[in-house]
Amino acid sequence: MLSIALAGKPNAGKSTFYTAATMADVDVANYPFTTIDANRGVSYVRTECPCLEREQRCTSDDCRDGKRYVPIELLDVAGLVPGAHEGKGLGNQFLDELTNADVIVNVIDASGGTNAKGEPVDIGSHDPLEDIDFVETEMDKWLAGIVADNWEGVERKSRSPDFDLDETLADMMSGFGASPTDVATILRDLEYPADPLQWNDGDREALATEIRQRTKPIVVAANKIDVAPAENVERLTNLEKPVIPTTAEGERALGKAAEAGLIAYDPGDADLEIVGDVSDPQREALEGLGETMARWDGTGVQAALNYAVYDLLEYLTAYPVQDASKWSDGSGNVLPDALLLPEGSTPVDLAYGVHSDIGDGYLHAVNARSSREVSDSYELEEGDVIKIVSTN
Image (cartoon, rainbow, N blue to C red; front, side):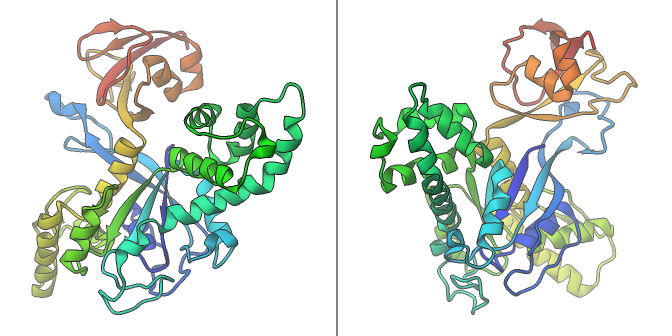
């Protein structure tokens, strides 16, 4: 399962974002290090379900009238403070937790209501633009330190006649999630001395930055837009990097209201509809939230998760079935499964995504829309419904 980590300074709203996206009970408070032990839960990315093309909607619990929710892991860890890469605050623990994440959502306080250390201050008194690069800077410095600490081993291995720099660095960076392909691609694009003994701090820092960018891409969630000065949000969204306006508190409130039957709302909707009996204060709060959503196209929580998976990681959703005509499994369940795969994946990759035994016994695949067999090298597209024919 893909893993998304929530990063940022204390009090930016990471735990609220986590609660809103998972509807799990966690500690949420306005003081640093509310989160000490990492919270792990299941959230979802949202896509359009292929069942919209058919008269019969799919039977999956993860589909809400054509809105398909595909599970991912969400990780909420302790907040970063300046100097985290040196171990300040809970820095080392935080950064260690990130090594298994596929992508990072950097939650910042767009209202300017927390200072550089994550301490509460008057709204608007801190410039949130100063927080944009904070997480990636701390991660880059932390990883550069790991590279530097292990460089003596690289130099020692370089004396061997069969030394291979790509292989050596891939071994060193495997714990950070870098594959041999990642390392080879990065080294092709970097300028560096052929002899590891000639590398300097700048060379190692450049390597660390490139590895972090490739293996831990970051999208910024500009949180607290419901209380943030509009000019703050506008400046943030005009930056040349992905920034999603977000109100995690608003999303959490909508989740509770929908669960109570007060509103019609699904995560990721751009608006809400009041359908239950609400008090005047509740109506006022919901209508105010609706105005915020109308301005920024929703609460942003679902949009941030979607951007992380579908845009930064460039994944797609494919639907494996056993019956190509009914789009169902062996028990008649319509579109029971949805798998996230990297763009460029093939039916063989989908087969292995279902189960290793299915992949090992793979024979061929059929595109359920056209009822035609597709080649083993066919590149899957978003929303493909594929019948896998296997000996297992």
